Image (cartoon, rainbow, N blue to C red):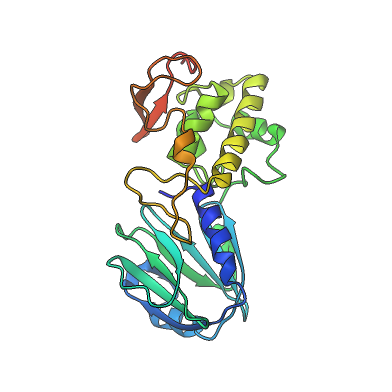
Length: 272
């Protein structure tokens, strides 16, 4: 599933289309549109100019002329690509937005878990999300308060979008490894130093991944809005590296299952 760095990379790429007008729209999989009705969705989009592209957690937020906002969640396998005129058909295209310069925005989604919402008030969709991990309000003190108020295992807690918005399996594993904290540690048992390390690790790994356009794995499921892959996969320390040496101590990386999710760690650096 695309996580915060991948969604941020796509948002940056789509900003190239800001100022363009939507001259046509096509919904090829009606269930991709969570609201409103697909027919109304198309009617409200056509003729609108793109005014801005942002991100909240794993949601893309496209601000449109007239007050509407188009919110897109990529689900497990979604791609959002800004492609030039003349590009051929794509098997898994679910929604197409044609722009006045001949280009189009194509939302493809093989597994069909992605969703699009057109709304005047984005908070109708986004209000339950936790703080942004790269935002100014997410301080070490804030994280300490958040962790101390829970008695949950760290890995599932960090994956909870109502707790902290944007983290997924890859960057949670990488941040916990950097912080030297075991994914099964209970949140209210972290020391002050461990909280500082975890806060720093979360922000650093996300920022570095954004700089490298996100992580494209072997399945090449994720690409940016320009169709290019991300390169942070070259920097991964534990995710997807079972049996390979830990970059810090040389111990073979292990994989366990936490809350139904495959979880990668170094058993020496991240002792339970």
